[in-house]
Amino acid sequence: MVRIFRPHPLLLILPLVLSIAACSTSQPTPPAAPKAPEGPVSDTPPANWEPVFWDRAMRDAQAARASGDRAAAERACARGILYVQAQTIKMLYSYADMLDVQNLGSGVPVRTKAQKLEQARDAQAQARTSGNTYLAFDPSAELRSYAELLGGMKRNTDALSVEALASAYRYAQDANLRRTQLQRDGKDSYGEC
Image 1 (cartoon, rainbow, N blue to C red):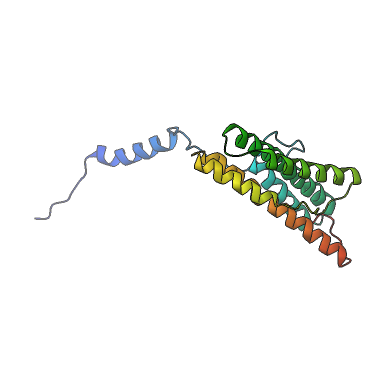
Image 2 (cartoon, helix red, strand yellow):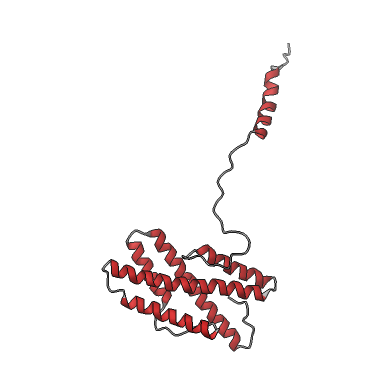
């Protein structure tokens, strides 16, 4: 005798009901991973070091160059490089202040270096030129020393932020050097960074 299996009618309806319920049930959306803001960056730089602002300016410059808009690339380069320069000066002053407060040595030499960098920036702004100026010290090395100090104080987030600024400063200086070399070779450096 052959027995035919006949499922209970509820067993046939249950998968259909579950699939309808799954489609119609609102599920909370998972939190999105933080990412750099899309679109152009505001021309107003943040008051404090924000690596996202720097990164977006460099990406905007790259995209503008790729699309042939060298004027937009130049504006994005200037926005990023001037921001890094200003934040480097600000961070060097903070480093000098911390050295004074923590009694880890005098902040005077670091403060003097910050002033020298600030004077070089102001002189370039008045002359309306960009480029490299001999400072007799490496601001990115000073920033790395500051990052080490912060790391030693277990301020790891701050240390990483200062380290990122040191890298951005080095990149900006390398960009200025590339621009100078392009000009020396008789090539257009407009929008290159």
